[in-house]
Image (cartoon, rainbow, N blue to C red; front, side, top):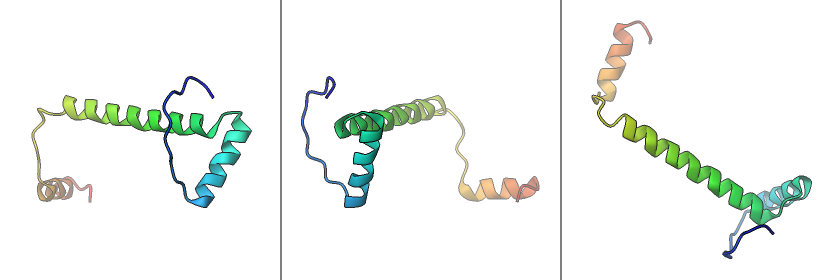
Amino acid sequence: MSNLSKRSTIYFEPNIHQALKVRAASSHLSVSELVDEAVRLLMSEDQEDLAAFSEREGEKEISYEALLNDLKKHGKI
């Protein structure tokens, strides 16, 4: 195992666990390393989403109904 230092118990559906074990073996990584990588990727995506929300914070809000009306007005739907 790499530099992982905290232990946790995770429960997987049997088919997912089997696929994870096969993936780990074929990539020469441990299941823990694959799960750690997946969680890091998920957190990175969350960070990108939060940044995008912050960048658009000042934009004017539009209701769903108004959006649909605008799309129809411009021949998009």
